[in-house]
Image (cartoon, rainbow, N blue to C red; front, side, top):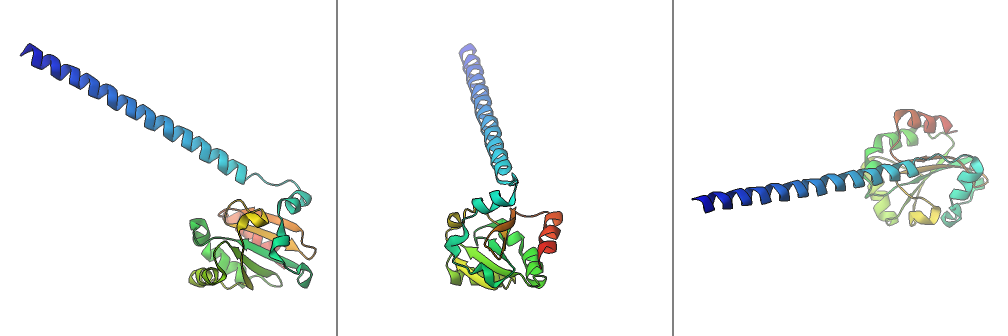
Length: 175
């Protein structure tokens, strides 16, 4: 009976140590992943300081757009695989309704047909849909909105799902 009790005691201790070790690994892993995600979000959300920095950050020549045709153009860099883009559908609908004299171009990494279908499902009609790997225009995350003037310079830049205040800022910037 003593041996049986001793065996149960050792088994229980080993089980407790194993569970504690696994719990420690999970907690450390969650902490590290959370910190990395927070650091990445801070990097993406860091505002650019000036119009020159914004213009140099975006390589829009790959879009092959004649910027002079419009006073300004809103480049909407999105992806059908981006849930933040889908979640922003109501805002995009407001953009289209309030665009005034601003041309809106949607740029997606997916094919033009898939992009048109995606936007149609969102209830968003833009002036043009283009297919281009987003890194070609220096976009690191979706959604990204770039307000481009007639010279091809980026005047304003918004990254990520926007707060109501930022959405109002975008709408106010439309001509």
